[in-house]
Length: 323
Image (cartoon, rainbow, N blue to C red; front, side):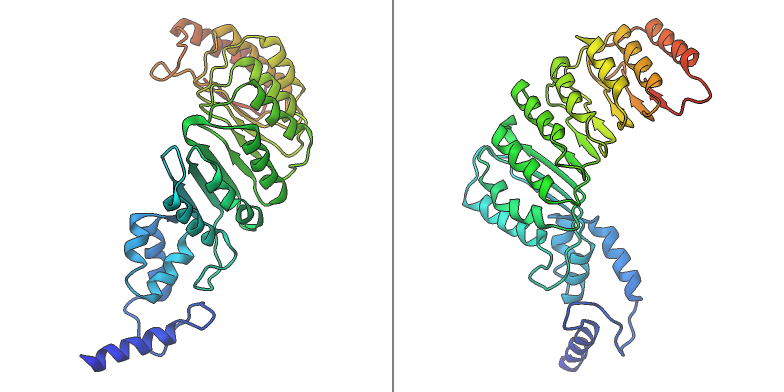
């Protein structure tokens, strides 16, 4: 038994280089290394922390290293109002994943970070430097429990996006946004200091029509921002003339999601007309599902809108409309 164990240990040593990369050894594998890696990738699902990662990474050194290499998304969830020593330790642990090299001297490949933090922003402050320097990061999502978003937090978040030029998507959904915060966001876009950002999501944030218009004024000035998501807000079509004018003047937006809001049939028709006439917008989602919508339009109104869309669309229009 001891002889078999020492032979297995030699096998692992030959399989793992000193720099952490993996190579084939002189011993025969029951499965090719690429197959083992694909199985582990599938089992873990690319997310840390997770139950599957904890169990699979404990099998042996090889599986631990393969597990680390398979992780590309961080989901950190702390649902309580106040950060404690326990969550601070958790933030520091997450911070090790956000560094270029982890404690195994393996390159991290994190491209998506989803943070759900407590009332106290201290946990986020601990991760700011790592987020700013993470060269593989493409998508950043941040929610503060208690919907306690502030201008200070927004400035810190946009400062991170400004310093990390690799971030393409910023998702601040499920936070509470008032007029002051919407004006703050708009000013960051108007400054044009975040040219790397391609997508901005602000779903379920209780944004109303006037606040949405103030945000649009900043969005239409950003040449690289092509997608915005404002689903499940409180946009009801007040001051619809301003909304349609801003949409009509946009030269860069290509995807707009306004589904599950409070639009009337006439407001929906106005927005659709503005998007069709815009020529740059390629997709509009203004879905008003009878099951989920907050303001259900009648079947007759829906059919009328669909008929008007077919009448307005020309062969030269390259836009998809979901209603």
